Image 1 (cartoon, rainbow, N blue to C red):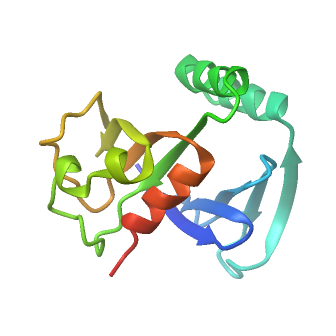
Image 2 (cartoon, rainbow, N blue to C red):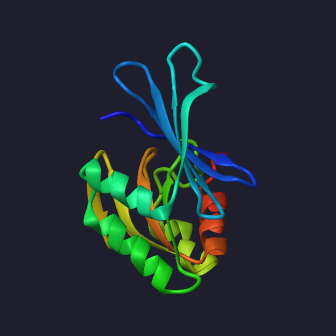
Length: 161
């Protein structure tokens, strides 16, 4: 399984990308306004996209289905659209975060931001409803639910030192 890199793009959103076995860089930019941009870069120039596609929400769902994605993602997205102000994000814990090796309880994310960690994905295994004793590890992907402002605050709290 390829490692997915996450890069915050201030004022834009978040870029997720990985490298295929053939050396292609494939990624998606999740714009804060909700737009998603899929791109593919060659091994020779990882900064220059050979393909860029703007995808609508329906197209994103279709692509996920074609690739064998989980209906859970679709259901969460639908739920997010039904509850005004609800935001859901997948946040990767940086190995250099002040909370790497510490617990969810230590981070006090819910208390400080109003956002809740509803699952932790580690090494391809999901732990739903993690307790306050769950330790963060570098590379963990947290499924976090809250307001958009709360999610931004979680990212800030977990940022690298």
